[in-house]
Image 1 (cartoon, helix red, strand yellow):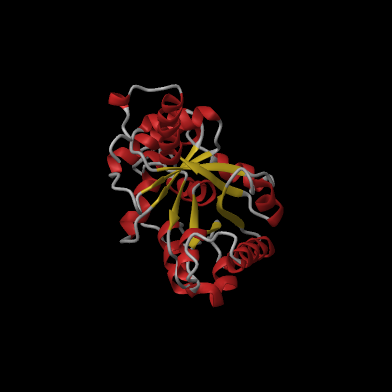
Image 2 (cartoon, one colour; image 1 turned 90 degrees about the vertical axis):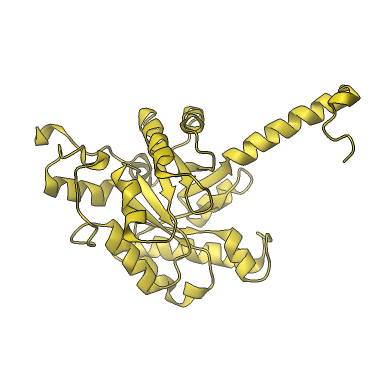
Length: 272
């Protein structure tokens, strides 16, 4: 039985190891149908958020199942907390976890210890959950497959760890470093100025070090700068968000109705 069951391969890691670029979109909404819709559109990966969004683990589990049904990866940005916050999404068979605000080399080492099995780390061991096929994968095979097919993403979003950046990215067991320009822009006193020279310099530096150390680099981007980011060395790029798309869709409908003469009593902008 053990020989017949293997861990589901990661679509993202398969593409990255071939030198290809993986596309991702951020998910704020809890409904698993959002995952299905985005998956059917053709994304390689969907990133669902628990750092800023009040989604509980039961909602996240349904989203992971929806992603698996469409053969795409679902990653979970976890809240900063105990080791259980890191490993539970992995045990629900998320393809990976994203850890926000990594602030030091010691911090990065602790995350790797929590998210990788021996010999890379000491992730608490179970094997009786979805990622281990409910004990249907031999234990040593499970550990080896999890280290290869499940990945961690460490976010650099602050100037604080810059002096240790090369050491952080060099760490055995680190799969991907992800530059978050939003919080970084705030930390340098230029909130929302994504073309600020310090943002551009940090983007380039992270991608360069990742390539030099044999690691993968990810970041947030858009259609307009997607090509320039790949040229810079980024292979994992998150483009768009469900809430932005839905908000824009609703706004466009109302704007178009106003243009064709929506009756005044229907005008939601009346009196504003």
